Amino acid sequence: MRYWLMKSEPDAFSIDDLKKVKKEPWSGVRNYQARNFMWKDMKKGDSVLFYHSNTKTPGIAGLAKVASAAYPDPTQFDPESDYWDPKATPDKPRWFLVDVSFERKLRQVISLESLKANAERLGDFTLLNRGTRLSVLPVTESQWRTILTLEPES
DNA sequence: GCCAACGTTGGC
DNA sequence: GCCAACGTTGGC
Image 1: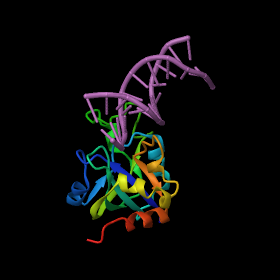
Image 2: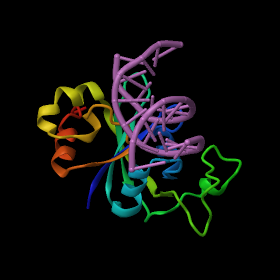
Image 3: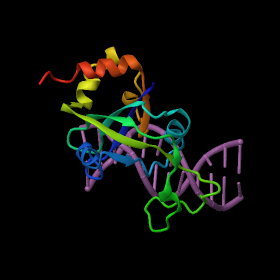
Image 4: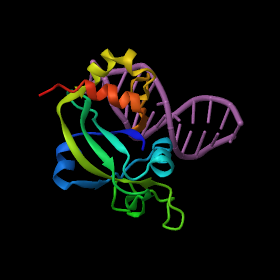
């Protein structure tokens, strides 16, 4: 069982949206490193920190699970989609995704600010590295545990 | 295979 | 809305 962090812009797809639909194909990732994490390393049942980016208070908003094995992102084949990739074919797909299922909302968003304030306890954390724009990234078990201690009691 | 130009991410 | 940081593209 591994741990991950996945970013989403809440204006586009928030933790509340995930709660509503329960399960969502994580389409639209068009970065090779992020794709490789989903394609090669993620397993059904892995745990996911659901991160809100590009918003007033960026931070971790909820918990989710990897709900499927990786499979080709169907939006790459759809000329109508924003994520259409003319170089991808069903025979030779270029982009892969996993389904993500809702687990729970955090009682309060664990803000990027508070993650930074605990940077020392978190150790080397990709999210906090300068210039990191990865939308799918690995989290260690100890980071996962540390982060959850930052959630308020009630 | 280099690298300038361009597009995107995402915090602020 | 700004812009630094970074990834990708494509000419050479």
